[in-house]
Image (cartoon, rainbow, N blue to C red):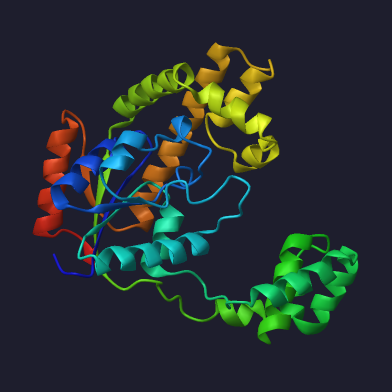
Length: 314
């Protein structure tokens, strides 16, 4: 493998990525980079399938616990942080191994997103304070005078998007559409080698049922309770995190334990279906079937594909 090679182990939830990723990292001497949109929140462990504290102590892991659930995290922000981490790993002559199923985040890192300007944080804070003090109708009119194309596409009471469009045009001197028309630029240059773990739906459903029961029996409720006691329940609910929504409803008496587990399993199956479809059509990878194979066997097969080639791209 070249020094600029980026390895990734991807796939739907419950396909065994975490365990196989740990085995691969050990064999490769790799450092693991989180590519899961829920494992990167420090308050969420049990319900996200995050590597255990013992696993994370055995070798370097990056971007797990990088944000709080109160933080606003975008695919672009993730891509910038992950690119910086991978450059640091390369400086140590170690291979980076991305592990996770956050397709949009991975695509942002691999291919880049629509271009947007880097805005000065102090100027942005001052402008936001000014905009927050004005009625949303006035903001829309202000945007219409500077970026009529964007204003015409936004609802007149969509304060969040109107504010963002005003930030860009007033601080960069260019409308948002001009930035979005520029070709995407990946934040990191490298040769990608991607293996996707694929599990037949019936087997995946059984795995999901087992994992759901384990989560509710091994601390998911305690995590949800701790978040609520920390005053972060509304932030957690905004994430629409599978398992945590149901745990909160169970704690508040609106669901029974049986109902909470059944709903969690259903939503997890739905998530897995969306992820399988996304990776099939949106992200070039080499598929590795998991049926009838244990984690050690899968790690050996994935390692052979990384070292032997497979789908590659810059």
